[in-house]
Length: 463
Image 1 (cartoon, rainbow, N blue to C red):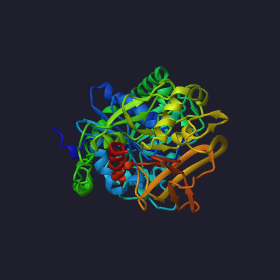
Image 2 (cartoon, one colour):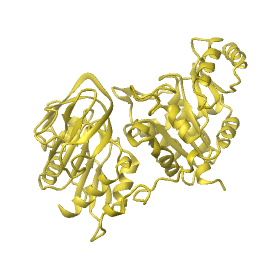
Image 3 (cartoon, rainbow, N blue to C red):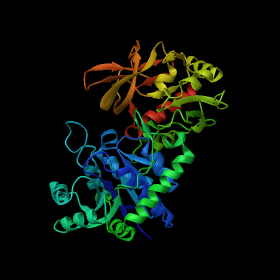
Image 4 (cartoon, rainbow, N blue to C red):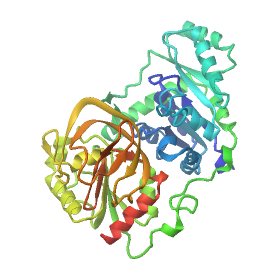
């Protein structure tokens, strides 16, 4: 039996964005799963959308590995938590192999995650406009950081048999094997819009077809046997890391643990097409803290789940569903009533918009005295944040790292009691704290500070 710390694993990376990482990684996941392997899917960075396709490909929860949000020390434990009981893990990288958080060196890069996991890297190269030069490109990436092992190359967007032969001949001098070649005449149709791919929840039947097409492309163009052998040669994860466990002594603080008394409070978590952005660890932490998690759909459900004592509204695309969300007046009123009662509400990004008076002129829940609208400007980047005051989510002074990713603006951007003080790119306050509500644009990963989930559930019990 494979040791939990020695799960076979691969990191799928590329020289730059747009090279085909998602197609190859998702195709590999689906192809290995079709061989009867239990495949653990992972994504480097804060991306919420790709993990949905990974989950579709493998039948397992897609999980993120973000060394900025969680800290490098949690990457291996979170990976091992997700990979429990699996035969093989595939990790899709982010951006270019060595691209990380701006001004932070290798932090949060695919290269850093590969080193933390001791995983070989498969480099996906867009070969559409080159032949012999591919050797210089691969040589540069393979030699840049001796701690990163480039175990093979998959050539993408290859034009012909002759083109493939030239590429393979050039790469013979690099000592990096070619593990696949995918033709550019065989596109995989996955539609995108203003923040990336359209989430699986919005196009499930079509997404199933897309994943099947990715798997077929990979099966026909890649040496799956060689890729599996590469993964099985990874060895043990460095550092003797143990799997992360919600509420475990390793990552918890017994002196601050939630007292288990009475029945479990119901925490309603927004889902459906409009609210697809969440980290699986959040629900796991809430459950470990003693909550009963019930998912609801703000587009279709006219009531909150029976007995709701707390509400979590994560990210997504409420701007796409503003009409449907606005038309569901009974649920908007139920959310407002819950918020005004003082029960805890944690809202991030899309959740923030949903709690405003209106979004693009259409009435929302009216919990916050603010309006939201779409713009042409993309706000994107990591943020260092500190809780300005006490809230249902965090005690004043709590420091967390977050990520912003939106094309909307909320006016005003902060309430009389802001949620966070943000250091970069400019010092500012952001978000709203009122009654039991904590609403902000920042996406945070609660595994980095498990106390927020315990605090939230305790407030559900006592509010």
